[in-house]
Image (cartoon, rainbow, N blue to C red; front, side, top):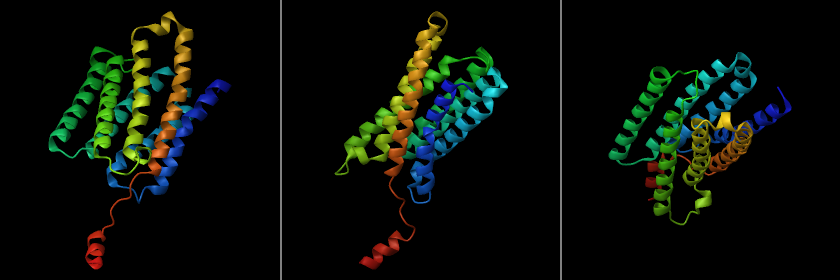
Length: 229
């Protein structure tokens, strides 16, 4: 592993920060945040697998693994928004969106193209959906916010992290889809270099957010309220 690759690998391990915080607080936090916690745990495991093993098995294996993780990423984050939604209408829309994302992934990777290639439609589409859902959730959070500052609101910080990460992903995937890689390799090298730092910032924000995830209600809460009366 080159010095540059090693440095990128270390920056990718910033995902360990939210993973450690999440692990420490796992039993205490509100159950509605479990999907994002699972996402972070698997992301850390994925970074270790890719950095230590997958990269040694060739580009094809790495590409297949990358596509598979992107599908997992989309579904688990959509589940997170599903848990945050209250209305049955919103939950129905998210179920349809999950199915649509799965269909697009299968169609693009196995019918119109190959899973061994870069396929932009799915990548841009699911990133775009996640950004829209994050913006919508932020708007709802601001409207419902009382005295608790937004900088200590876990949902707000998580959505900011997702917006930063996936907006830059849309930018990168759009450049790749337009063939900028072949026309200007130096530009794309710089774009990917910035992406490493964007990813690190998003990871650190998730770690901060996990510190503020509200605790779950105790099972004997109703009994305690009765005792107080």
